[in-house]
Image 1 (cartoon, helix red, strand yellow):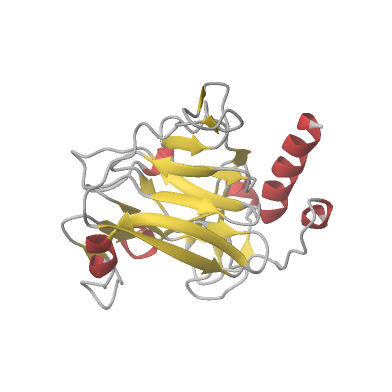
Image 2 (cartoon, rainbow, N blue to C red; image 1 turned 60 degrees about the vertical axis):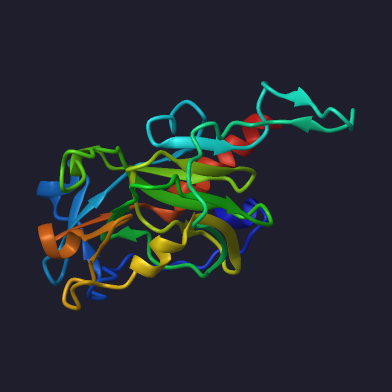
Length: 238
């Protein structure tokens, strides 16, 4: 298993639609489009997984890690100061959470955005995360579904998203994954569904949309492909 080559023990199984638990099929007519359907009829759009880099993630945010641009600490010559998160923004309502993840199907049926802060995720223990993103489009009520991208983060760096970037809660590849999340307390309060049927959330700092209900659509990715992308990146650095 590729994740084991990365030093982790992964647990995933044959893809199934998390909305209804039906096994996914891939009709030949839609294969070339990256589409499939679960046996309950949800359209499932498969998104290629790419390893996040400062360049390809730039439309969505900034990677938090060591960079070639840094300065030496005023008081400690052995400490370099790196500040890639120049786009970080929030206010006195900011809070810090630790999220504890267990593997779940790589299926994105929700996308959400935040208006007042640049939400940040920092993986702990070097364990990888996978995320779905769509560019910010503040004048529109919904994300551009043709612009959804999937990135794999190798665990060596976190990321801070631009305001308004659409995203799903990150997915772990291995059990026991933890990440620090920096966000607003207001957002935490607003993560209560305003509609029990759709489980959507709407507030001053959040719009969380259910794509499965609105468009009968779920985005998915291949966990093995994500692990392969990370493994390839790891080998290229050796």
